[in-house]
Length: 315
Image 1 (cartoon, rainbow, N blue to C red):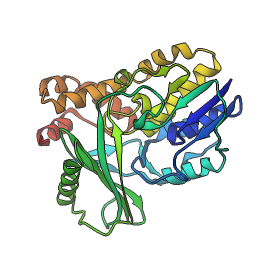
Image 2: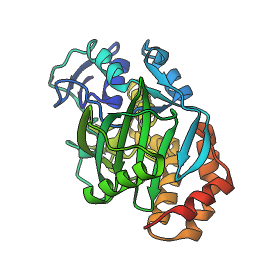
Image 3: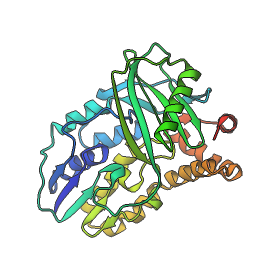
Image 4: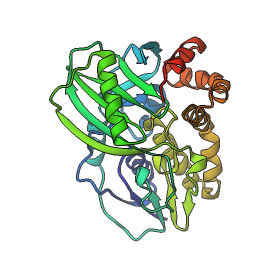
């Protein structure tokens, strides 16, 4: 089988490295080099194991493990989220990749929210504004949220911070950044770089079809992003599932496997969706699932701390 991957981000580059020893694989990306947009955080234990499968030591790209995540002023102990140099990791992988387009039996859509090859889907797209600035602040993860979106500040080491926000509109995203600055004292500074992007916040069940004709999707293109916006480790895990299905000649099982593997994503998105719609009781009933999932993946959550954050959310 000959396979052509479109998109060399987290999912596409990882899938290429998994497939290339066994198949003839082409890969193509519209960018000339990886960018520094959001997604500096990753679930460490899972990602380290996944990258080990392609001979990459995630520790070589480690920047910081913040002690706390702080949401709307409420502290959560960070258990497993590390900040890593995503841009440099992708640059190193791209250095091992032969970029080309081949006549393929199967095409892989790893183009993220744009779904460049799969049938288009409606909804769930949030504009984001992002920048890197210099600040002198305690190196925690900071967030300021309301029902429709949130702003963040991630420490990158040596005084650099990735600051940004995503919301229903770009104007609302700008408002969120200002609220974050006021809450945590990140005064506006000259940015090292700035960019705008989009993220699709829909779970896999709402991003079907995963397969259309000779095209199969992977990663963000089919909704493998947590309800709280972390898509790096899910993208890698989704690529691993696709690789397994191809090796086992069981592509017909891919959709079922993805939906089963990412049930936790469905639950987190249901929690967030109920918050956005003001269905507080329905959101409250899903809190135990959120606590269980995030204790495994990242933060030491408790019922009391989540309720405190929910009470602080505006519309």
